[in-house]
Image 1 (cartoon, rainbow, N blue to C red):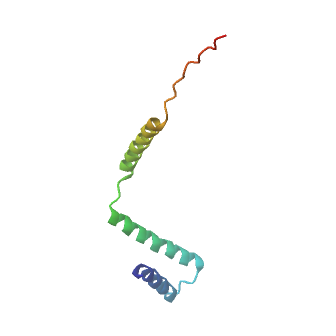
Image 2 (image 1 turned 60 degrees about the vertical axis):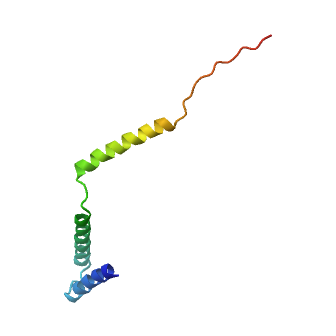
Image 3 (image 1 turned 120 degrees about the vertical axis):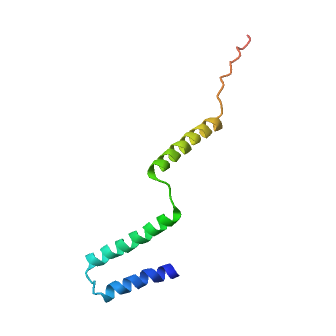
Length: 84
């Protein structure tokens, strides 16, 4: 509730200041949302791009290994010849 109230308060301030132009309003909305996104990212302490790529490669290699282990091994059986 408090987060939505924050956004609504910001919109109200924009309207009070006379930003009635749609382009200006949309730019301000984008700026507000970007600042909130940046705050959230800073709180989460996310990994860097390089670390993410390394972890992504590790996960994909592990997924490949798991898929190889799950596949049933196909062994060809010899056929018996019919006796006449």
